[in-house]
Image 1 (tube, rainbow, N blue to C red):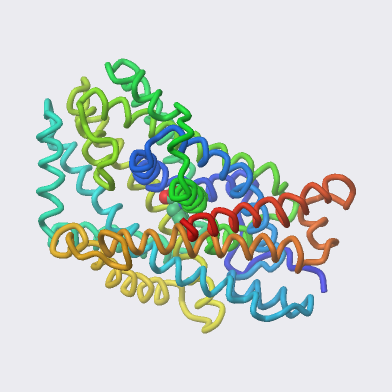
Image 2: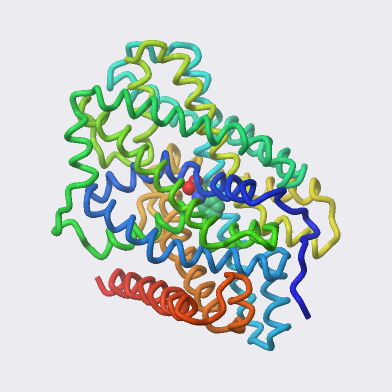
Length: 453
Ligand code: PHE
């Protein structure tokens, strides 16, 4: 049976739309909020280099694998895996990749929406000029006061969830097209404005140094695991988000080219965010390892000192919210597409149910920053840290490992060759080596070394 040429959920109208949509999925809080704070916690330099290596040698091949599997199956990840295992007489256990992706999606979405809600709150704060001329202490206090009010956090969590559900109900294609067409390029532009500002600060050198100075002593098994987890998270890999989007990719689009562009765009935004945030950290004597509040303290501080800061600051947080929403949409797509296929349900109904479930789960994250701030879970300082740890460092890499193995060994060579536009030969060997050996082995080694330590 030949593979389908269209998905029932719709198709990206061009190769560029796929690039924008997948970049919209990849670029989000992971780049602007998470990358700097994880880099800060892991001591900078060495972590950043490890992260870049993980993107190139683990992320890119696994992203290619996800797109090719998705496009071959043309359904939600669960049904794609069902269809492909049946068609090629493989063990049905491979379908677990789809299920674990859906589970990871719920967990990620639950906390993602809470943090995105913080960005919404900061749109108003920046717009009101409340941070004009603020000192580092003022900015820190504003943030911790905000965290102390769970009802406010819940309010913004709810607003963001409602927006996500609304867009998702309209269908990923029409819902996303406008958002990614306009906001992605604007976000890039504004990151560069901020970068220009960061270059003028006293802490610029120190910030750059912190990000790129390679200190061998800082390469611990934990840092390597953090770098790998971050690479998976930031590229939206290991849970089927990219596989789901891959199902809507036109047949004649080159997977290698598009995936490379997406990975580069994503990396540029993350590195730019680091180069914006760390100079501000050092200029103001802040703590690079302060954790999840890092972006919400440093960026408002910078805008507070800039001419037209209130305006730029407002725009910045609007763009961050958009980047977050285009990611949130993709996090829910694997579950959503599956339920629509399975029960022939209306997208809007399914979207609302999914939204409610992950909203409830998200309350755990809300309380991790106030009532339960001192309640450790599973060896992690808070429930939020535990959820983030489980998804980034366990579920996504494991999902990615099996996705790579499936693409390399379970799919027939002819299918993969046709999808990638290579017919055996040297390129085929390179593909097999990278996707079947280098990427899975790297994931395994990182896992084992972190376990042993
Ligand atoms: N890549 C997104 C970000 O960096 C988050 C994400 C994770 C999206 C997993 C989809 C799947 O913000």
